[in-house]
Image (tube, rainbow, N blue to C red; front, top):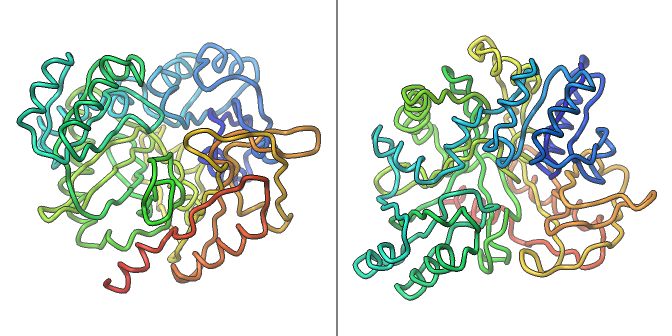
Length: 423
């Protein structure tokens, strides 16, 4: 089979490494891929949002199956366009990808179908939003309605901060058209859990839960990032919580989307908070999370392509999806200064014995050299019988990898360890 994977980050590298394990896979193309992915797939310089270019390439290169991984092309209709040419895909069509593409849609869906989430209001004009903030409790959460590279959410600790956030989004267009509409919602407290789930629109198969670390600095300080590391499974996601999520969140979400004529097929990401009132949805993503994928897929025992094709063909209930009874830790190695200003172009040195444990996100090829080309450069993942051991092994690997201006958090998994110890 000839496989096409749309995207060019660490998430896509993790997907490609897993797809390569299927003996039926002859060739994998990554559009656009990156310098590190080039070791595992043929990279083609076609952007993830170039839908026409992706479709044209797929047709000309006799692609048998396509995996559309990032949010932008999914929301833009990449799956619809590929399917119109007879190419089977993993990923939701545009009318289902709206569950991430519009936060207002997602919140209204949850309200309509009784899916637990934070209280909220939706605003299409700045004045109304500012007026509402005069009486809204703080802290409060301000969200741009559309896609914003994971940066369109601001937690405001005062009314002044909240109003500044609204003006930044709606007046100053900090996130472009994504901020034309905003959601202002209740600030929830409790442990956060990420759960990715395979679904064919009928059956829901949750993957191993994970814990992301969004803040740039140790101690969960600093700016929000795309994720500085993950561990799996998440100790806060107990069997009891999992059962409640399945009955009150996962299955109702799939049924709600079906009722709206927006059947979701692909990977649905549930961003959850375990509050005193039970689990609630913070956000949906219409695809694999990054860097959650880098700890979840290494634990997957069942062949990924087999699962994906079953999702596409609506027969997920016929596949026994299994995960290792183990723990995983991924530490992100970033460029110093990320997520603000950072420099690129530094040579990356990775020992050969670690190549299978490294997922490349922001790197390019310069001749035979691999050089930094982004904020998040690498994800380094280790698996072990215990969480503490997985963390120790991941950091031991990180210390063997080098590039100028490398930065990484030193406390990935610390909260999870404390949770397992009851602290």
